[in-house]
Image 1 (tube, one colour):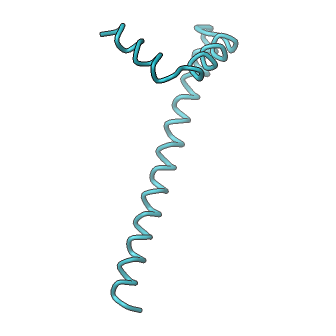
Image 2 (image 1 turned 45 degrees about the vertical axis):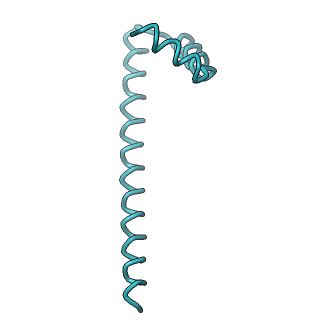
Length: 74
């Protein structure tokens, strides 16, 4: 095995470790969001229909709509 092969293998291992860390972070963030949403439902702060409607509304937002909202907030 040549020296550059060892470096490439090391880089690949490092990249795989970084991907694994990102997956773990993504999972934890998703779990935290799902937990918060469930608590909002359980405490009757929002209901599932309101949540679904808001999610659908936000999903249709364009970059321009988001910029307009941001400008209104400033």
